[in-house]
Length: 331
Image (tube, rainbow, N blue to C red; front, top):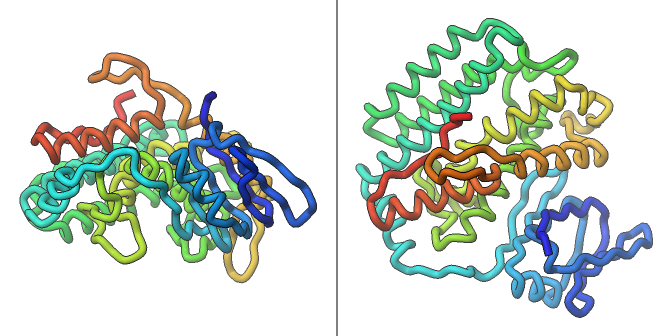
C-alpha cells in the first residue's frame, strides 16, 4: 500500500480501532485511516488521543506533527527508531564539539542555502525584475563562507543573504501580495503567513527524514542545540526552503492558485483559512513527488528523496569522512 501524509484539520478525538485509526470529530463525523497508508500524520485541529492510538502509530513507525494556534508548529511525537547506532550519535556529537569539523559541515549547509536562494532570484531576474545586483551579491556572500572561522560568522552571512533575498520578493510576487519584511511571530500579512506555513512543512519533512537515520535531530551544526527544537532539522530545512517553500510561494501567488480570500486576519496576525491550507498542502505534496535526474545517483529521484539523500550524505560524512553533498539546485 502506498503511504501518504494525512492532515487532520477538524477538532475531535483520535483513537484506535483494531489496526485502524478512528477520528471522531466534534461535528459528529467518524473517519477511519488504515495505519499502513500513513507516512506521517499532521494534526492541525484540537485533537485528543490516548496511548492505544500512540501505540499503533509507534508500532508502524508513523510520526505525528502537531500544530497549534495560527497553525504554529508545536512539536512532534516520534516513534521508536527503526535504526539505532550509538557510534553515529557519538560521531555527531564529536563533530559538533570539534570546531573545525563543525565549521566544515556548517560551510556546506550555508553554501547550499545561499546557492539555492541565488538560483531562485536568478530564475526571476529578467522575468519579474532586474535582480542582477542581488544575484552577484549572493554569489559573493557564498564565496566568503569558506573563509569564516566561527559559527557566529556563518550565521551572520546567512542572515545577510536572506535579508537581500527577501528584498526581491515584493517585485516577484503579484499584487496585492507583498512581503515588506519577514515577520513570523505572528505573520503580519498574507505573504509572511504563506512562507511560515510552508517553512513548517519543510521543517517537518526534514524531521521525518532524519528520524529514518540514526542521527540525533537535536544536535545541529548551525543552529545551537536547545530545549525545544530539533536543530539539525532546522539546519537541513534551511537548504530546502528556497527549493520547496519559496518556489511554491511564487507559483501559488503568481498563478492565482492562492488569493487574499484564502487568508484571515485576527489579533494583529494573519493566517491561512482551512481551504487555503488544503490548497497549499495539495501543491506541496505534489512538489515533493516531482522528480529530477540526480547526477550522482544516475536516476530520477523525488524532492522527498532529495531530503533523505542529503541526510544520508551527512551521516556518511560523519562516519567515514566522505564529502557531505548538501543539496545545491542543479536542474
